[in-house]
Length: 196
Image (cartoon, rainbow, N blue to C red; front, side):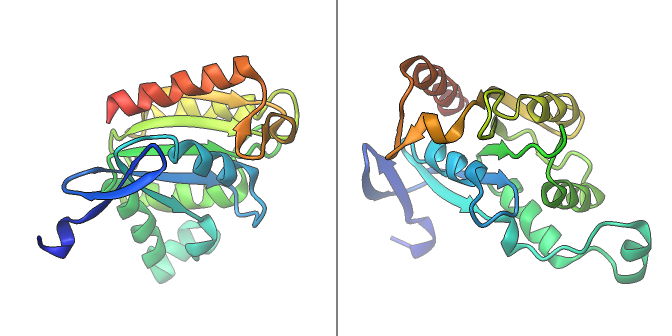
């Protein structure tokens, strides 16, 4: 079997090998090394079955603060193309956004802006589970609303959404503590799984 056709297959916590499995990326919309949104996105993407999983980190993409003078003077950074290619080459996306003053973190907005200069429909109609979380009871609900309104104009195919409140109280030891919240999360994951 050619090596480029072998992909990890996750099914009930077992890793096997198969051909032509779907690839799903996960991204936390923060550059914090302790990003709870990255933790949540990683937790969720690993609940999917029969997929190849790739967790992305915004810190791995070195992008100067976007400005038209920077773009015209130096061009679009290669890391913006690399991040956009991860989206384009995926079959699905789990994105969990941090909320800073009611909107995206600066790091995420900057990456978003750079990618949009390459392709305005940057989400490429990939099925997306859009999430947000925070230590507070609203779980980043405001940034979730901002993203829903914006992404639809930029190739966003949001098949499920969820604000995950009180992160540290509700996700412990690899489990969602609150049963109602867990049921809501499982339903959102199932919607993405079906859309892949």
